[in-house]
Length: 121
Image 1 (cartoon, rainbow, N blue to C red):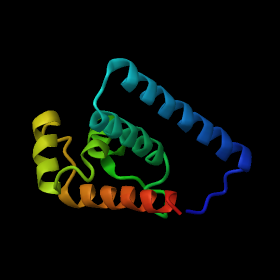
Image 2 (tube, rainbow, N blue to C red):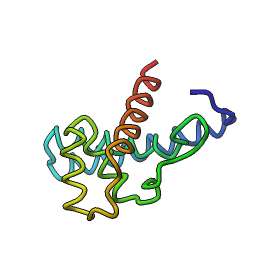
Image 3 (cartoon, helix red, strand yellow):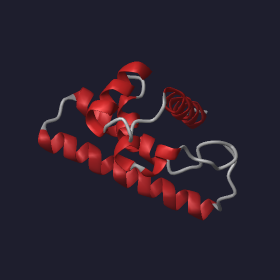
Image 4 (tube, rainbow, N blue to C red):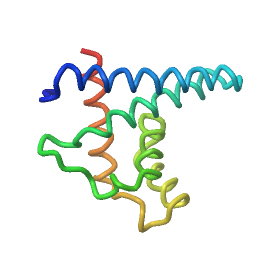
């Protein structure tokens, strides 16, 4: 993913992400969280960092993007449940008005997959 950010900006953002990850790990250890719980919290933290970027190549974001609770829950559910199950869970938790469409969820999860691939390069 191309970016116009200066090396200083990138370093500052990476240091902030590292600090966030360290905090999550330390909290998981202190509270005796299971490995799976810790893994999910770390993935959620990474996903949240990635979602501060524009969603598509044109810089547009989905309508639900500003709903942080819904966005966070979608990040947690990514690769854990099907889209249909995510819709059912979100509808139960947040109501039909706040639940994104099937296609919006699919596009968002594809974006998260792309972020993951690009981060591993």
